[in-house]
Length: 112
Length: 112
DNA sequence: AAAACTGGTAACCTGAAAGTGACTAATAGA
DNA sequence: TCTATTAGTCACTTTCAGGTTACCAGTTTT
Figure 1 (cartoon, chains in turn brown, yellow, green, orange):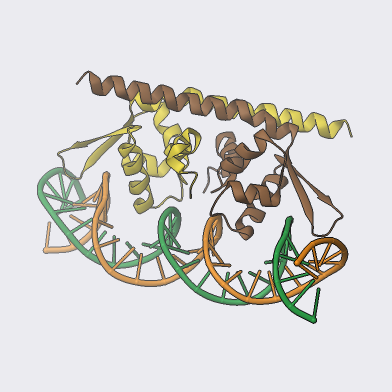
Figure 2 (cartoon, each protein chain N blue to C red; figure 1 turned 180 degrees about the vertical axis):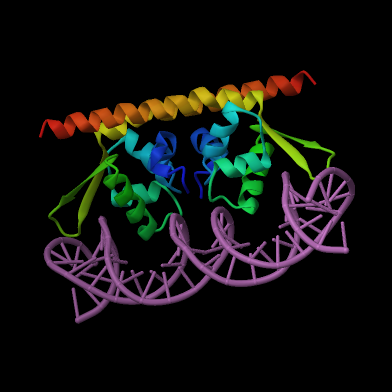
């Protein structure tokens, strides 16, 4: 691809939360710091491997932070970073557009 | 998935333009109505099959419209619909967030 | 002494999306 | 007569994010 993905700020941004489960994970963490197991319970049907994977990517992108306690059995907590929190208003914008566009489509249909 | 995709307005919205090539296509059409071949030239390295596919999906979602002329060789023109045009401000928002967040990260790095 | 607890990892499998190359239709031009 | 033209389609292969299952470590509980 000549129009490189990373050249496009929109594509780059969507890559941050576009993964299969990232949005639900971010949503859960936006309300509370959570342990691995707590996230897993709240995103039903996600496997450990995939959850680990998505968390690592979110961490690598600086959206969440991981704190590991030196205990056994292990305890690891995930939290939205300040940077991660700045994403929330954007997500709200996107949701707002969707609601608005649904209205638009409804009006168009009603006028037929 | 129990947290259904279609339940989430953000996921639903991203699905509209999140496809591999949809953003570049929308960007191209935001500047001009274009024929199939013109789009293909402007998105280098995309194959006909995939381009057709993405165009069909964009059309099904109401973002673009397809006008076929009864000529030979065939001529087909694609245009952003009014609905498609409402997406532009949102994309600008997303790009703005990215620029802002890059600034934020730069500041954080400089202060180390 | 066995089992449960937690947050993983390793090895393997799978399905959908993406990519490839050949083929088509009807006319205009060489 | 042969070729080029455009917007696809068809059949096939490749790729890889995502999914499944089994296993681990070290302490506490039964």
